Image (cartoon, one colour):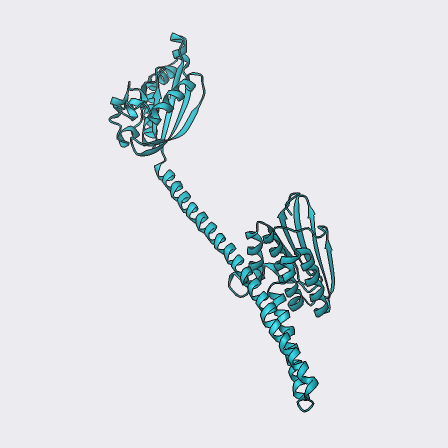
Length: 380
């Protein structure tokens, strides 16, 4: 043996001790509890986190069974840690890694425990048993409490959103009912009174020549008021929407709007005269109404098309014009700022009815609004 080799052998124990010290120092600095277990599930080594976690002195941990170390004097048959440990140790004996999160009620901690089976070659050579395990225990209490708090806040947000949606849906129902009530009062009461006044004036016209100019003027005023009442009644809620359904109401409204605004209008319908659920009919009519109002007021369009049909198990409504278009994102930002609620109102109404809406537009390329609702045969 050379002098150089002899010198290396003499230095080897010191190097081993230094490496062992460095390793133990590193493991002791870890915040997690780290234990090495023998084939019987008893602690061979443990790091200093055992002491920091209040499990006793490191030297006293040696030889203890893991559950006994974590839960001294625990005889609870329902202990979550004990149940986990029994199952994990059985899996470790078969070479399987196990990890789980445990609500440790006894220590009032949330633990993440990982059990890693190891094989020790020398031990296996000596007695045929090479089952060892390294156990790493993390304290995840702060993370779990943060998750629980986040879930609690999310639950509150969801509950608040559901309540807001319920209130919004109820508000739309009340609004439509009020529109229906006012429209009928205008048509049935005020309209009838104006019609009666017109008839009386016409009778007076026939018997009083001296008052003829005033009577004719009064008849003209009553006729204008009567027409305004009829228009207002129809704008609030056309009776045919309730009496005949969506398709006749759309056909009438589109034709009327096109005639008054000088538009070329096309309406295509694949449903015949089928009736849809009242909420869907009202939503489709209101979206069409809002879209055509925007077309007339802002789009400078001369052509508009409205399509109603069924495709891929969905009822769809598409409204397109050839107007000047607009910046959808900018309009949505203005709506959020409270400058104009048109887009948000349409989106909210469709969402509350269980549908989806897409608005596509670009400057100089017109606007297309696509609305869809789930549809199954027999849902009419």
